[in-house]
Length: 154
Image (cartoon, rainbow, N blue to C red; front, side):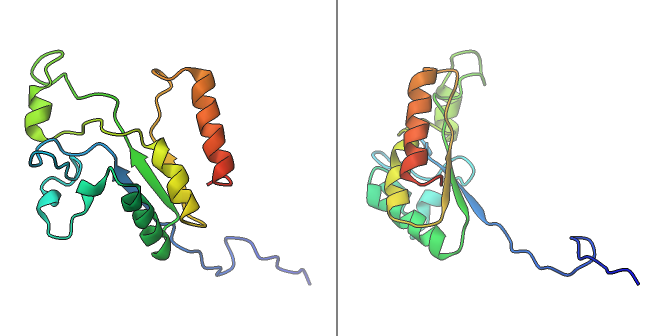
């Protein structure tokens, strides 16, 4: 009699759900003066009474967000970024439509908050948008390597 060896196809091993989140670092330019609301994928969210995106310049905002996500058993947080305004709609180098529509706008460099968030958490992973076109290779590799070491690969 042959023995049946369990494989992924013939046994009922349960697998967990992997949760990740997307955070847009550049914020909406349509927000009231001196406020930067949520990104273009959630227009008008800055009006919600519980919105805290105006605190994007405060490191506590980011560490609290990372802790909240980790407590919710999220596996990762990706911070999207852009390097400049979208300037192709309505003609080349025309930023007016992007400004009026509240498109993404560059504000802060997202890699800078990762080490603070990693220090405030234990297991959540981090991803950020970086540009290999506008970054010098050595400096980018050094920054990414430093974050990799400081976060223990997270």
